[in-house]
Image 1 (tube, rainbow, N blue to C red):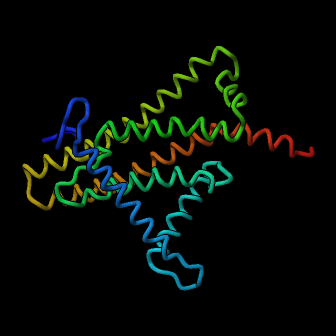
Image 2: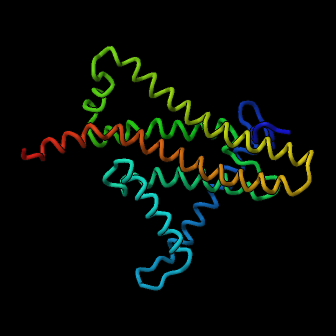
Image 3: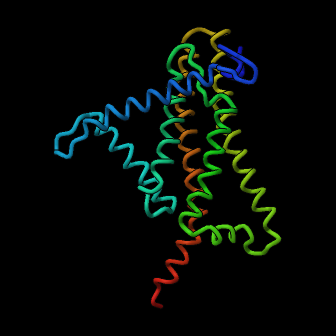
Length: 232
């Protein structure tokens, strides 16, 4: 039993390795790109729309509402990043219904890459909203002594994002594999259903946390705008 799809290696030459994680990740990305092209090529503005467009609008509207609830007033600015994160993780975890499929999110390399993307997105949106120097000042608030602690906080929450997603998906896959080897068919099917639910919940939690981190990075600018606009 493999603990991670990284252990299934198809080709290796020196430091270059093609494993199951890379293959499934690229298959999922290709599926999402082709699916997006097919769906968006037939978008309509009339009252009668296709079922796929209706599903797409529900997903986009829901993600926008969640971004607003976290505290970002302009969700269209962030949905490209947050929405892509959610859909990739959700699709990766949803495919566990396929036999012998191992989700790439069960690999620490994949979850670490996703967490690093969030780690880079936070200062990107923060600097875009507040400016370079204004954003850097947030690391020395309320005093300069807090600088190392704020840096450690940034790094630790990135590590926590990666390990949380990896741990939940990997452990679920291990439980299903063990039950398949020692129990009848019915119990693994139930576990597959629970694993599917867990995968969707983890996709939601990961993206909500990413949105919270981004909101925290831009809230200083939002506060300044409120103070300037106040006529009290």
